[in-house]
Length: 181
Ligand SMILES: [Zn+2]
Ligand SMILES: [Zn+2]
Image (cartoon, rainbow, N blue to C red; front, side):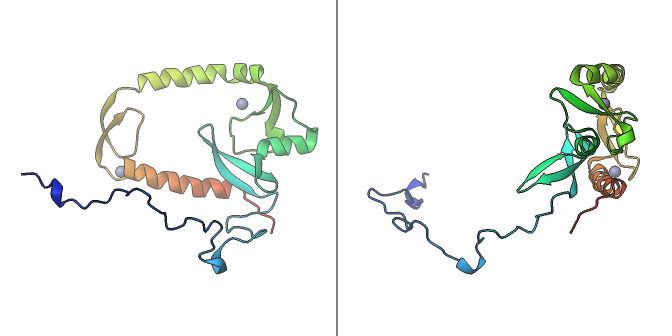
């Protein structure tokens, strides 16, 4: 049996007039709307450091200008000592720890040199990744639950989510976020 005739006819009729026609610029809740010059709750001062994901890694980023210009802290630190970063060049972390933005750990390399610098370890990581592609049953290190994943996985999805959150907190403490008031 067809119930089509029972469906409400909600389609627009011809010459339909929307409720907000001819009232452009209407203010429905003026006491709570944003006023010019008001800072949002997430606003921070220039010089503040935050963690951002950058090419799959957590990196310390620093606010350098209003309203919303952020740069990698490694670049800001290097430039504060050596002047402007030349075009086509990049800042390399000598000890491979991208959270260590100390000036003694930073080195100016051209993009080509930087690729060369990391080539061996990148290739090794790629090989390791290919070996670990096969999915198999794995016991979660944290909760002991069984799940299917590639060989290098250690934690089930739930435990992994918890670990990512905890890692971020630990990382925050490590990079010593100092926000000027
Ligand atoms: Zn590097
Ligand atoms: Zn688990």
